[in-house]
Image (tube, rainbow, N blue to C red; front, side, top):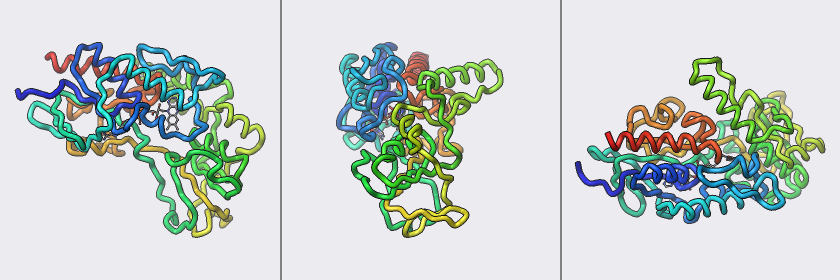
Length: 353
Ligand code: FAD
């Protein structure tokens, strides 16, 4: 066999990549983490200013190290998460190369060749942990191109001051939509459009309960019992304090989804119109997988078929942190540890076989 540069390449150095590194080290494997960002923190470096976690610090930890509480905040803000991740990678001395963007992962005989914008790595296995933030999803609503105002996605929104006094349409009934609508409710002329009436979780439910629900669902499915419905059975929107305040002040009233846009605004099925200056699409994300295209693994809905984290058609590749399809609650800080541990363990088994 030709000699690899390292045993495992981890693509992505956000929380999922770091959790992978923690367990690869414990397995005694040689590895490198390649991250496209110039600085630590993954997507948390780019979120809107008022974003806070939907769980307390104690329920937002990666393996091995608790997140310290943030003084004066029950739910830490994104900056606190970035500093936690920065400390985490330093504490465990994780071998991270930045900024390095992986362009493609290719089969190369018994190895996988990882082509980057600064050289090539050849490895026996790859863990892809590139998140979803980098692939915003925009629905195909008629007239989108005709709209004369400004359009942006969640990933571009920073703070309400940028939109003061303007007529803003926020689209989306998930957590991002609710939080951004709450942020804008005081200083803009806001319309919040959602596909179905917003489903707020009970005020005393936060990310802890979501994690418990995802875990209970996985246990039920593993044991062959009835699907509990997981997180979706509880509701869509965590009533974090700013959302609760705006809702209780009567400022978070949702309209049904409009059917099209025109030059001046949005139009509902019954012909009602709302003129608008800005439309903010809080309509979600898709997994960032284009670097895996050379492997030809894509299945239905753009996902790569997996057994837990392992790609079914390429056992040297694991996918980590993209959502429940790569492990229950794996797209959360507290949830990514377990699938990371299992992926590292499986890779160690494969390389020792
Ligand atoms: P990312 O943080 O996106 O990290 C991936 C890294 O890979 C990035 O640094 C990226 O630059 C890099 N990368 C991408 N492509 C390449 C490439 N080709 N080559 C090299 N590097 C690459 N979770 C919680 O636990 N609690 C919360 O309260 C919470 N709130 C959230 C709020 C919002 C608005 C969103 C969107 C998510 C939230 N999440 C929350 C979910 C999740 O924790 C975050 O999305 C988190 O950032 C996911 O981490 P990750 O490591 O999977 O991806």
